Image 1 (cartoon, rainbow, N blue to C red):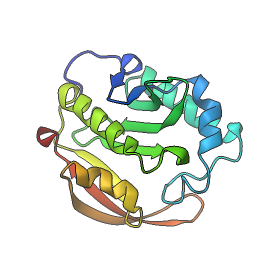
Image 2 (cartoon, one colour):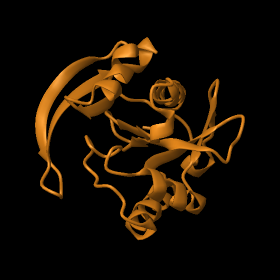
Image 3 (tube, rainbow, N blue to C red):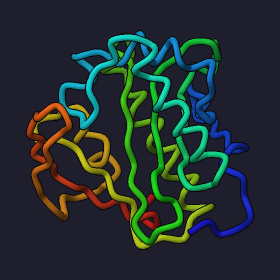
Image 4 (spheres, rainbow, N blue to C red):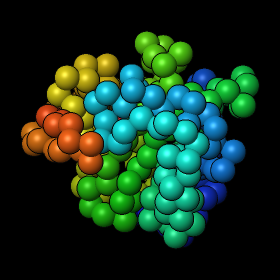
Length: 182
């Protein structure tokens, strides 16, 4: 639960190399361009075939930000804020166990930007959210994404399968990040 009266639409988190800001309509094209088969390989969502596939996500995200029920952010480079790096979110921030999620555009893989973004979001959550822990579910085979919670000292606390709308089976391992350890 939020510790104080804060508007999620106003959240901006600055890390060493990134600015994490609320998702907006201007992000439609970069998301549509980058959200492809390779990026979504281990995700619940399917790749975007066009901007029309991304529009409902943008609308839902803006509604969640406006209603203060979902913190959906875009990561951009600090040195060039028009350079889209990826999307991340803190879902269900009013619950005892909010969920983290992230994806990074291919050209920024293996640069530590995913870890930097999640670490920045976790630090924000430590200050702004009262919760038992943050959940970080990830497909068991997604080794690069698994390194993020592991670098933050998290351990696997749950495992389950999840079938995507396209029929793909995900074998989820769920990490728990305790904010007092960040």
